[in-house]
Image (cartoon, rainbow, N blue to C red; front, side, top):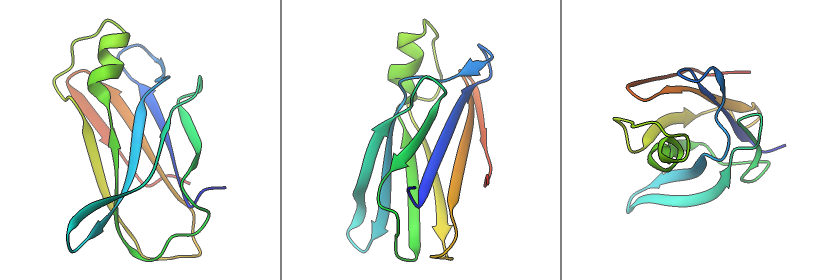
Length: 111
């Protein structure tokens, strides 16, 4: 399993957000470096996003919400959502869910 996984739920439509493009990036001295990218499945999940092990550091998931909202006939306020987090425990799994609607979003550290 990937060290980092995600799950996107569409709170406005009340269902998993399918086909959301997501990038996993690592912060370096030069900026943000792409680690992996994927697209959510029919359950709104990406289970294979990047390597099984990552070094400590600051990472972020960037969700392409503009394309998703367009595909579902919604007009969104946020063209993308970037969730930055600290990966401090290299032995732990990091699951970062996103609850999404056109005018709000929330996230938390999942399990």
